[in-house]
Length: 248
Image (cartoon, rainbow, N blue to C red; front, side, top):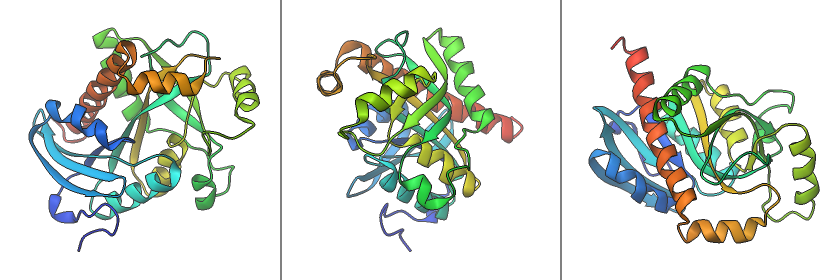
């Protein structure tokens, strides 16, 4: 039976998923996969299956925000996926983070609504340590600029209090802001899933978010290179985990 939203089932026999928000980002992942086939496209959930260095995986978009991300997580778990990595975009909350820099989320501030619907706010949202280390290994090997730390997952892109909240979290050392990482880490931990989140910075600290996102859509050189790097990092990290946990 197909899952009601992602329209996939366990006949795929895949353990790994790479999860962008934007369905169009699958077109940029596709060139890196062998034997790639489109699977389904329902609402925000577009999916395809392929292999990277012999490791089968699903690429599936999750849309914007925690609610749709949680749906993807739950239904992927139902069909046998137990390792998930988000590749998304974020706005920097620190001045030393440049356009196209990668942020490896060690943990997330749970300022979203979805994770709170699952469990008490005192429950932490943290990444899988092996997955995090695999991403760091790839970035070091490639000599790519990256940052490791805590990100802030918020609920609304246009909330009136965003500017003052960003200043607060910046002062507390938070690296960047997105809308999905806290949900991925929280639901993932509750469902015994290995999770990781890589964010490509598309907005400099204290710059106008709307203008920067517009430039990103127009394929600004630095942010598009950042996207390429996060795709490669995610694929290589999955490959490293597969080797580690399968004794290869």
